[in-house]
Amino acid sequence: MQSKLNLVEPRIAVKADAYVFDIDGTILVTRDLVHWNGLHKAMLEVYGVDTTIEGIPYHGKTDIGILRAALERCGIGGSAFERGLPEARAVICREVSAHATEILGDVCPAIPELLLELSASGKLLGIASGNLEIVGWHKVNAARVREFFSFGCFGDHSESRSEIFANAISEIKRRLGSDARACFIGDTPEDIRAARHVQAQIVAVSTGTYSRQELASLTPDGCCRSCTEMLGSLR
Ligand SMILES: [Mg+2]
Image (cartoon, rainbow, N blue to C red; front, top):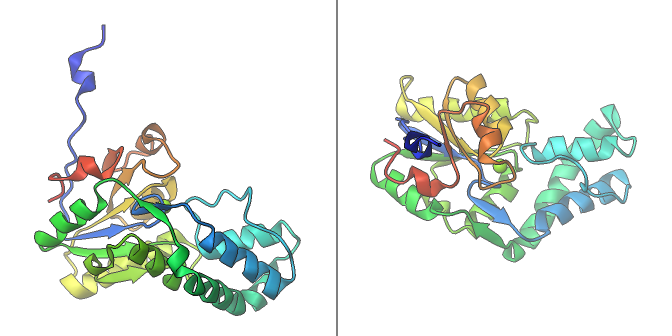
């Protein structure tokens, strides 16, 4: 017989001065092809290959990492990849900006409520995402939560999520002092690993593609099915 205790969800015991959110799978799940088409256009225009990111395990990867993986599959790597990168970034941003009003997303449960609660209690709120900056802010705008965030760290010049998270930590320390405590909120194993790498707290949320069990096995500080479970829990 299953003990009643096993059915009790563990409380999330996180205290932080700043909360830093991932975008895809954490703030919203997009249902459009705007970002996908931007990557396709960049590969076609800049590298001359008619390919897509289909089949690339892109969840948790940065935009540049996704582009690199898709192009390597077509035999384009190394210096040929690097040479085209500035132009490829520009094409992605141009395309996503031109179609920004077509970004359709399901905002993840309780995201507006959680952001309202955290900002009312004076927490610094930021974004840490592998998206290119322009792309990321367009998605945050589409989710109608832009006004909550004071800063964002993105993947324009970094393929490593740990580096993006380290930039977020620097920004938090610059604004709040060196003792400031940070907590990241993300939906992939990469978010958990990157937060550990920068010695920050992390609450994982299974509103993206990974299950709660998969995320919990990496022992984040908290693990939720959705941000609903975080309401009233983050101090
Ligand atoms: Mg994500």
